[in-house]
Length: 207
Image (cartoon, rainbow, N blue to C red; front, side, top):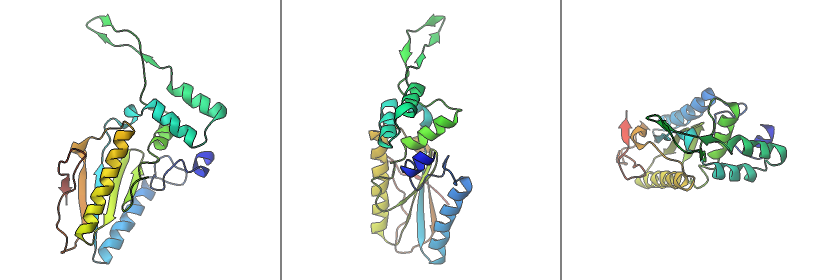
């Protein structure tokens, strides 16, 4: 873990499975942003994203490339590769068994290593986000931004689009029906319009 922290394998907004961070630090960080917006008579928009079967969708080759990027090599790198690779499965239906196939995605759940590997997988999710704050606890991800003008809304939508592109490039999928949007505070000069999902659908607004 020390090696991963030193090599910035965890992004600054990640609070899951990171030393010194927890659900409490995640909430405190977000509440601080909300408080600052409200006391300054401003507004903070937040969109909550939901990954579809997040741990199951992790592409092994993409993950291993990120493991190498974070200078995890030698015996540890080889062990991680063996942990992921050479897993096989068969399907039995109506008494018939399929041919054996190789598992090419997913991190085995229920292990500490699986959680850490997932955090590494999404470590660069905010790399192209230029205007908003991205906060995460493992796969639970939110995007927030102070909104003072219509231009700010456009910038936040642009940041959401950057995350959608990241997901596509990394072979991750979203469950768009579970996306939610919240508005904290108010700005009379800005229309309270919903942001959109990767498919252009309006995100459900919760008060």
